[in-house]
Length: 159
Image (cartoon, rainbow, N blue to C red; front, side, top):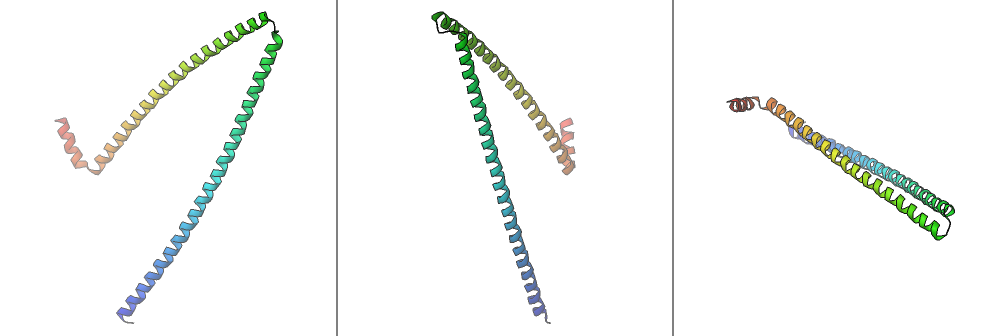
C-alpha cells in the first residue's frame, strides 16, 4: 500500500470510529432522556397521589371539626334553655370564651413573633459564620496557589 492509500484507509477507520461513537452517544443520550422522563412521570404521579391523600386528610379533619362544633352547640343548647335569662347566660358565656380565645391567640402571635426573631438571628449568625469560613478557605487556597504574592502582601500588611 502506498502512503496515500494508508492515509485514506486510516481516515476511513477514524470516520467509522467517530460515526460509531456518535451513534452510541446518541443511543445513550436517548436512553438517559427516556429514564429521566420516566422518573419525572413517576415522581409526578407520586406527588399527585400524595396531594390527593393530603387533601382527603384535610377534608376529613375539617369535617370532624365541623361535627365537633355542631355537637358542642347542641350540647350548649341543651344545657341552656331558650328563655331570655338562659340566652343572656349563653351570651355571657360565649363572650367570656371568645375573650379567652382572643387572648390565647394574642399570646400565640407574640410567641411566634419572638420565635421568628430568634430564628432570624440564629440564621444571620450562621450565615456570618459560613461566610467567615468560606473567606478563610478561599484565602488558604489563594495562598497555596500564589504563595509568593501572598507573602509579599503579608509583609506589606505587617509593615
